[in-house]
Image 1: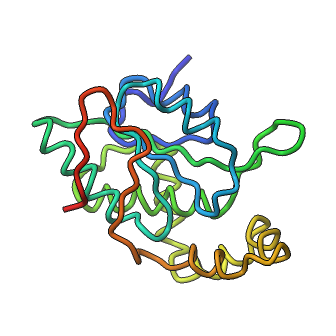
Image 2: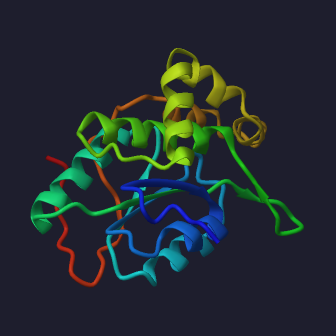
Length: 186
């Protein structure tokens, strides 16, 4: 079955997507904007032995800079698997979350701006969606199903915080990988 392994920047959804695009990647980026997914995804990502970082709309540029610094540290290109978490429905199926799609696209667009631009078609579409919708991203996030659920649960401040574009230089390292050292965004 054809996969995205020949591309430098890859994109897919959830645990199934992780299994599809992570083999051969040098970095895995988990995108979960509103923190609504379960932790199976982060545990699964650790098994690939490469650095795993967390991204959202607040830190997408910092994540891209971190990936570039990682490539410079390695002295070679390191393929990037960008995985949007989405949400698990009660029946166990994946519900793609618009906020994760947009943030994944933001990461991919920021990678491309730094020259990490050999994108799979899936990654290119995510990037183009973010770029085209960038002026409306805050509204789209706050109007999303997940955001409305969180707002009804009294977490409006969390939603507003998540809607801040490129507001953080922090790159949370979920798993350092077998040969990785913690490095801040440069």
